[in-house]
Length: 352
Image (cartoon, rainbow, N blue to C red; front, top):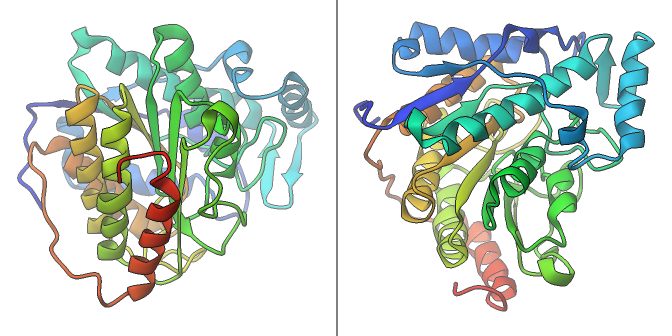
């Protein structure tokens, strides 16, 4: 991997209270964050990173994205001692308050990057519960409030940002984020995900509606795709469309569940691969949005893999160079064919 440089200030959002969202025997557990923090400390990264302490989002900020009735439902369920928002999504007594803190962590990261006096261009918010499946009216897929969508709305409403890129490489399609911005031309939502897989959405013809038509870009990949296949999709679809869109700010939903060791999916990405994906994001941000990037943690359920993968992302964020991974895509003709299919759909909207 590249040698580390601290020329660009890089930070992380973290709070011990994130561990209080008690899901019991569940893939999305507090151990995920413990694994990441342990790996960062073991590798000596804490001296190179600035820690940012989050504060809770207000109900008004959550309501940027979520219906008041749904917010009240989560609060009431937690006050009753917890329960299940759906068959996959448990909440405990503390979950409502911690979900506010999770969304607040994304908001705090935005504020820190926007404030140029901090010299803080890149922040990875190590938050939980995750968010990209949460819709306006429903928590699902381990997600309570949609952290990345709330962050994007915060950018629009507080700072007047008019062009926001959300890149989502969680192995599951971010149906909640897509739904929030499906008719919104100020947010370009890009998702690369395993398909068919949970939640079943994210086909190439889902491109947005009304004024937002063309501002949703889905890359549904077959099982088994590796680093090179993902990079082929990033370089041939995300990069040219992002350059055409010219985002003022870049947000990333970071899932590590496309890792080859993850128990909930069937992709073959390596820990190093996530750093290579971050290199692509950095290049987009440097050419369009003054290098400004905020990343939020989504999925990833193998504890060793999530720690190593997070380390790879931070290594990229701290580096001033971009590492190239050369390789031909010919070993996976399905990826090449899918990319061409997506290009045919997206050429109506973008120079690609």
